[in-house]
Image (cartoon, rainbow, N blue to C red; front, side, top):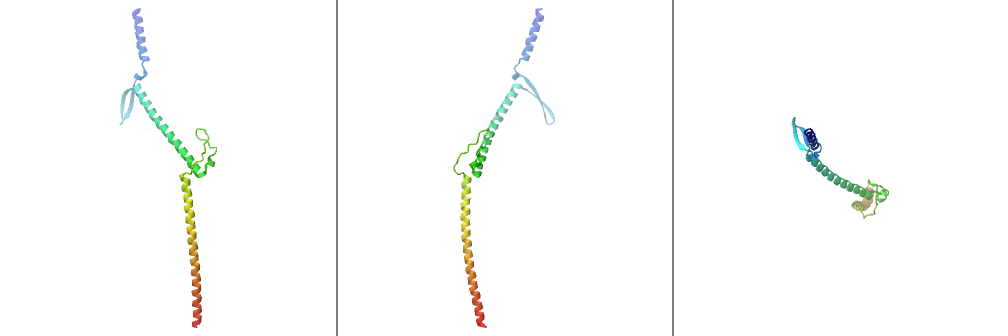
Length: 162
């Protein structure tokens, strides 16, 4: 009976070793098709898990970087909106994270400065054009007066010659 029980115990121990073998050591047969040929390779589950963990970590770092960039873009849009529409247009605005947007008075932005500069340049150009129009109209009136005097002279001279 002891040989029979020893055989059962040995079978149970062998089965336990197979069943409780670490998953990391488990071998996987992966089949892929390359150039219409079936290629099979054997890899350990531990290696595949490590590759996947590295992939997830890399993608997570990329995603975090993209979120930071997105936050910076949102802030830039808000600042541009404040420059164009004024801070009062953004009072009570709630950000993506549920917080109220803090509207801070800022020094004039490049946009606002450029806008002021363009307005000043426009005003200066308008004054210059108005002065030119005034000068041209004054010259035109003088030319007309001279033309009338010459015309009168011609008429008078022609009357005298008759």
